[in-house]
Image (cartoon, rainbow, N blue to C red; front, top):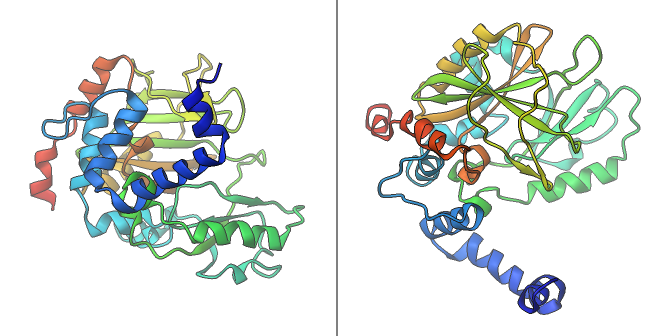
Length: 314
């Protein structure tokens, strides 16, 4: 049964006005430090210790506030990061780029003639628009969707500074498919002090059976779970056997190179029939707002992040 105050907040025009006011204060008025603490308490029901952070989630939030370097903006920009990849590990790991533009006018029959392809924006963490060989695009609808995304600044919602100064643009890339014509598996490598340590694997994305497993560098199942809440579904582990990726050793070695400047970072990869392609770089996994279970592992993983290392790499 909905309580009276909850009903007012969620179901009335007054409530909608209060929600807009809350969002405005969070995004435009209140200091970043206060907002980060508030959001952490709201999501985890725990107080965030920024003076002496110990858990991985606490340290992710600390880094969100106090590790703000230009290299973060470069690497969070899905277009500009291509330069970092090329100079650090080589352009052969980049997905083919078909088009890029600051305007939605780029969406037309000519720009989408190379198929399959995926349309993305460079400045947020949203998904892409898949265009297959037999897709009949509604160009106006796609432009309208992208226009809304281009108008957003992803920094404001969670105070992830790396997004603040990215100039929004549209990018159209080759859509990776394996030999079966399927979207390839993606692997998210979590790196601590510049070293790859754990790999996150999600399966059955976009379904009620979305699951997430964690593995160490030897492809042994980890003793913790770090779930996400995606549209109301919790990404719990599965007992389904997930094969060791063919390019695991290379994936780890390349992740080490890319992660060198960062105390903690996530490097995403696609493995297309043994050929590796870079996906993206993420600095604050799930915004640092999903607790690791059992809780002792939040502390164990947190101990692997040396914040003092920043004075060396800055």
